[in-house]
Image 1: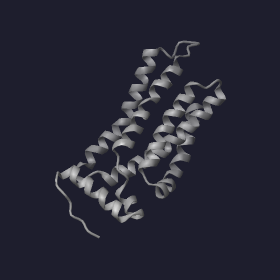
Image 2: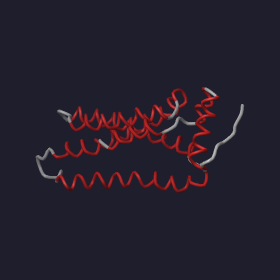
Image 3: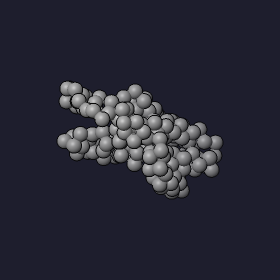
Length: 176
């Protein structure tokens, strides 16, 4: 049942993410999705009963469904063509690596012991990396150049110039 509600939430999130990204951009929604993933994970750990646990896991799935397509979109928009394949390999392996970390934490905490509440501790600890991701997004991620161009050509050009300098260590001369 828990897996079902997570995937249901993920489906709803996947259906909504494009509409949100087109209206609000890529950077800020990604930041909020990451925070929402952490908060719903912690809320799941604090669930007083199974019904609340199902609800918080459905919200977690919603956040995950919002995050994955949005992160894929911005990754495609900001990654240079010659590095895109390598970056996608890292992205594709992040999900199974995350699953391995979750299983490892669960094994260390012996969550399969009857009557054990250690699954709560596991949910808490595996929710924290999304806070780190939110900080990295806030501090280092530029808005999508495509979205920035649609709202302000000058801002879009400035983002492209900063990205070009980061990738090539030289200035890009672009005029309107």
